[in-house]
Structures are given as C-alpha cells and as structure tokens.
Length: 486
Image (cartoon, rainbow, N blue to C red; front, side, top):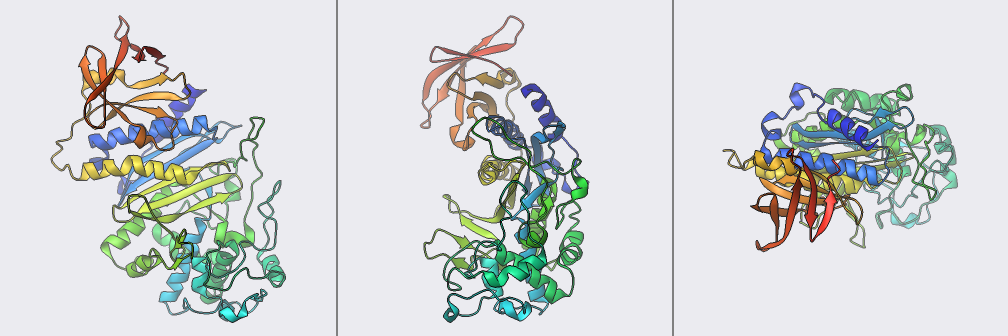
C-alpha cells in the first residue's frame, strides 16, 4: 500500500497547469527542485504516519504555482486519489470571501464599517447584555470583536448528522441568544458574526448572498472550482469524502456530507488547492501592481492590517483576515478552516509573495502546521533562486544521486537522504519542523560521509553499503545499520 501511495503522489504532483499558472524558470532552479522533492516526501510521510486519508496542497510565488502535490485518497473506500484539483470543504476560509464582499460594498458606498448591524438587518434582535458599550458594528463582525457568541443557537458541529440551520431558523432563534462581552472589548471568534456579515452583503446588494459572490468575486477571478455552497453534485466524484478523527481503537469513520445552509457565509464554501492558489495570486497581483481588479488595492491592504488586538495581546485580526507575526518577525495573513471531516489552511507572506495551501479530509489534522511547514521548506528556496539570476547554484553531483532514498529508523519513522543546497543531507520523517532537522553530510571517502556540525566541523561517519550491482542497500551511523526501504 505504501508503494501504491507513493506512485500516486509522484503522478499527481506532475499534473499540468494552465499556461498562465506555469513557473518554468523558477521551478526549474536547483534549489526549488531540491525543496519540492523534500516537500513531496515530507507531505507523504506526514499523511502516512498520522493516518490521514488524503492531503493536497500548492505553493505560490506571485503569479506562479511552483509546487502542487497530493498524497493519499480523496475517498479511501473507492480508492479515489487526492489531487490538487480535488474539492474540499474550506469551512472558515469562506469568511475571506464574505469579508471581501463587505469591503466591495463599502467602497461602493452601500455599507460603512461603523454602521450598526441593525441598520442593514432590522431583525437583528439578539439580547444585549452590555447595551452601554455601544452598537455592534459591521467592523466588529469582521474583526470578531463584536461581543457576539461563537455560534448560532443550534448544535450543527455535533455528530452524527452535523445538521446546520437554515437562514430563517437563524433569524428566528436570534432573540434567544445574548452577547457575551461589551462590543469592541475582547476577541471572540464568531461564526454567527460572519453569518450576519453575509446577510448584510445580501441586504445591501439586493442579491442573494451566493449570487453576489459568484458575480463579483468568483467569476471575475476565474475561480471556477470555488463554491459558496458545498457542491453536492460532486459527491463521489471530485468532492473529497470527509473523515472523523482517529479513534482510540485505530479507526477513522467516513462522515456524512454536510451543507452549511444558513451558516454558509462563515463556513460553507468548497474549493481546491489550485483555486486557492489562484486566489492568493490575485492578492499578490493586486498588492504588487495596484488597481481595482475585483477590489481596490488599498482596500485589500486595509483588510490585511491589524484592526483589533485582544487585551491579552495573543490574538490580532484584520478585516476578515487572520494576521499573525512569526518568530522571524514576518507577518502572515490568511485563514484556516475546520469543518466536519476537513481541515484546511491558506497562509500568505505578502512581502515575499509566497503562499502555502494545505487541504485534508480528516478532522484531526493540524492544517496550519502543514501550511507553515510547506512555507518553511519552500520560502528559503524561492529567495535563493530569485537571487541567483546567473544560476551559480548547482544541482547535486550526479555521482551522489544513488544515495538518495529512504532508510529505516529503528527508533521510529524514517531517515530520508536528500539533495540539499547542492550537497547531500538527511532528515528524519515524520516531523512537524523538517527544516530544523536537516543534517548536512560531506563526502570523505568511497561511500563514506561525515556529518557537518553547525560550526562547520566534521562529526561521526555515515557509511553507505553498496551492493556488487551498484545499488545502495543500507546506511550505517554509529555502528547501527539502517536498511534502505525505498
């Protein structure tokens, strides 16, 4: 089975893209090729060891998809392979499309961010526990600072059926709920809040929410694989089957297909890795060139700036966008999605124009960690390739390629020997932080290498066993022998 999965992964990763999305010069650079090879192996190992049914993803640099790949199955029972064009529920990434719609209407003069929600929704009659704090505003909805509860008054995240309410049910039940906090005081993530934002889109535009998004965002950007409602017609075809969490008895059950109904503006969309790649490229294009394609460039910049900081200083949020600061002082924007059977993530580093998209069809996957791992592997390679206009960075010596492969690890997992920065290296898989675990090797004799310490000095020997026919069959480190398994 592992061999079958690997063949599928390699085949899918080579799928052709439309000409406008190709990245031949950058993708062919030696550093990019090294990084994509590691990315394929890392993603497949994460899926296999975490028993994830299927993963798919893409890496974007500006207007180019420089990596696309997948591992495992969109449907385990029918052995339908995952691919970068597989459709997944993207759940809360839906909120970005709703937020962009609000800002479009703001720029047209139909909505103000300081408008009270009740100005657009006369039926907005939730009980105000802190009326002295002022009106709940449209901006409060987008920044999750409204004081509203997290959910509408229904158990839609509960198994076994995950039954979401209709729009009318949400309206009818609103008076039974009450606010949690004074407005503009604390961060409280709220699906109810972004659901109300979707209702404002419909009220202000005079169009049904889904029709507005299709006409004003999806169609102009060519996002033909992004749906404001789960495309039930694709069940058993392009739409992945969602699976529950890995249980104590070692099983993972397929979940029934859900539709978010009235919660769709907050959590109802489906998309593919490649369509989210196009979505990211549009943002890089707009921010880089300016203009008014779908949205004013300055409006997008406004959305991706911090507009609310929780008093704890642990959460910062833009207008619809998550805005975070990494340990390297880089700012990342995007959003994650968690729905019954699915975990997805879109993360963008705007200054570098690099985006990572991770999509999975299981509930217990840390898609955020996957997307950041993808970024960590690829972003340094992109930087190196862009600065190497004369192609002075070389590929791995052909004579060393025979050592590349997967070696058993008696302590669990695998040791992958890879090409890295023009030389040979090794990394333990699976790993949440693969880049930190790379061990560089330097050749010192026939099939013998030495580990290179961080200070450049040489450490213990790594010796490969070579069969009479030239095949590398094992790796010995500290007298311990690891068989080559792939």
